[in-house]
Amino acid sequence: MHDPSLISRRSALLAAACALASASAAGRAFGAGRPRRAPVPLPSAADIRRDYQQMVDFGPRLPGNANHLAFVDWMAGQFQDAGLMLGPCESYSYRRWDPRRVSLDVLDDGVRRPIAKVTFFVRSAPTGPEGVTGPLVYGGLLKPTGPDALPDFPKGSILVFDGQLPRLTMGSLTHPHFVHIGDEPKSASLDTPYHRLWTTPAFQLDALAARGVAGVAIIMDVSSAMIEGNYSPHASHYRPKLPALFVGQDAGEELRRAAKAGRTAHLTLDAEWTTGDVPQLTAILPGESDEVMIVDTHTDGQNFVEENGCITMLHLARHFASLPKGERLRRSIVFAGWPGHMTGEMPEAPGWALAHPELMKRAAAAFTIEHLGSSEWLDIPGKGYAPTGHNEYMNCPTSAGPLTDIVVAGIKRHDLLRHGVEPGPGVTTGVVFHESGVPHMGLIGGPSYLLSIAPNGHIDKLDAGLAVRQTAMLADVIRQADKVPMAKLKGGDPSLGAKPVTGTDTSKRGPCRPPRRTTSNRSQ
Image 1 (cartoon, rainbow, N blue to C red):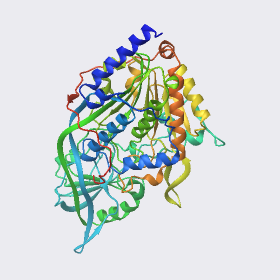
Image 2 (cartoon, rainbow, N blue to C red):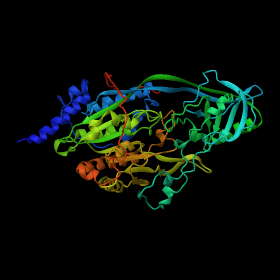
Image 3 (cartoon, rainbow, N blue to C red):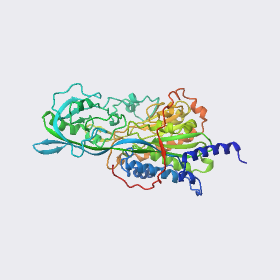
Image 4 (cartoon, helix red, strand yellow):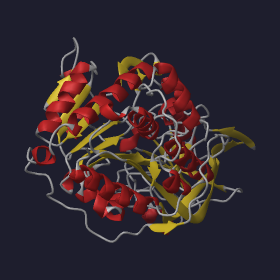
C-alpha cells in the first residue's frame, strides 16, 4: 500500500521541479530508462585532484567570459548525467572587463627595464595595446581614500605609491565560539596577522585622473611572488578613471628608486569592456518531502580554489543521487550555482533567492561551499613565499541551534584542524539565507592565492586529503540536518529572518544550450 499523502507531496515536488526544468531535455528525460547503478562513493584524493584539474583546464572563469560559459555548460551536463533535473536557463546582463596584457617598463638611457610580476587594478581605464609613457613621480603612502598630499608633477606623469593591506587578524574578521585545534594555542589561528590580498582596499584614484595623471603603480606590502596574477574585483565595483596596476614589494623597491630619481616609464594596461550575459544554474535531486535543502556557491573563479565549491556540489550530487531508495535523503536537494562574485555588482546569492522564492519558502537549511583543500602559503622571512605546513583557516558561519551542534560534531569527527564556527550570518557569500530565515552553514577560507590567475591554476597548492575530509564532513552535516524537523532547525536562532531578501528578480530566462561534457579551453 502507498501512503496517499506521500504520493501527493512527491507529486507536488516533481511538479515544481518540472516547472523549474521548463522545456529542457534534462527535465523531460528525468528518471526515464535510467539503469540502476552502484552507489557512487564520496571522492578520494585521486578523484579530487582529477576533478579540480578538470575545472582548472577551462582556464580562468571570469564572469561571462568564454571559459566561464563553457564551465557552466559542463556543470549542467554533469548534473544531468548524475540523474538530477536541471532548472530553467537563467542569466544576467553584465558589462565585463576583459584583461589582455599588463606591463611596466622603466626607461633608462633608451633601454627598457621591465618591473617584474605587475598585475591589474581590475576595471581601471585601459591604455590600449600601445600603452602610455610619462615621468615617474613618487607620491608616498596611498590611503584607501586617496593620497593626503602630493608633490608637484607635470601632466602625463605616472605616479608611484606605497599601499598597505589592512592590519587584521582572523579574530578581528570572525568571532568563532568554537575552533578545532591540535597542540597549538587558539591564538595561533586567531591572533596572528592576517595578510591576504583579498582584503586589498579599493584605492580611490579619480582625483588623480582629474589632475592629468597618466597612470598609477601601487607597491603593496607583499612579495612579487604573492601578488603575481592577482585579479581582485569582488570587494567593490569601483572603476578608476585612469590605468592602474599593482606591484610587489621586492620589485617595488626598484620602481620606487626610479621614481625618486626622476626616470621615465612606459605603462601598458590593455583591457576591453564587453557586454554579455552571465548564466545561472539550478539542479534538483527530488526527495520524498516537499521541503528542500539548498547547496550553493558561485560558478566564476580564477583558479583551483576559486571556486571549487562547484566541484564539491557535483561530488555531493553524484553521491546522493546514486544511493538506493532506502538510503536517500528525505528532503530534496537543490544545487544552486549563481554567478558574478568576481564583479562586485551582480546580485549573486540574493539574486538566486529572488529568482526562486518558491524554493526559499520550502528550504529547511542551506549550505554555501567555498575554497576547499586550501593549504596556507605566506611570505615567510628568510624563506620567501612558501607553504607554512598548515591548512588555511576555514570559517564556518552557522545558524545557532541544532545546525551548529551538527557542524561542530562534523568538524570534530573528521578532525578538521583550524576550522572554526562563528554565529550566523557571519562572513560568507551565503548571508542571504540566514537573513531570509533559512538555517545556514557556510564553509569559507581566504588563502593568499585566492584570487590569483596562474598558468597551473595554483593546483600545486591543493591539499587533496584535506578536501576529501571537508567533502565528507559536508555530506555528514547534510545527512544529519535532513533528520531534523524544519521547525526545530528554524527555532534555534532568534536572528533568523532579520533581513529578508527584497528587490526585483533581474534574471532572464531563455533557451538552454546543450550541456558540454569535455574541457578544452586554457585561455583567459
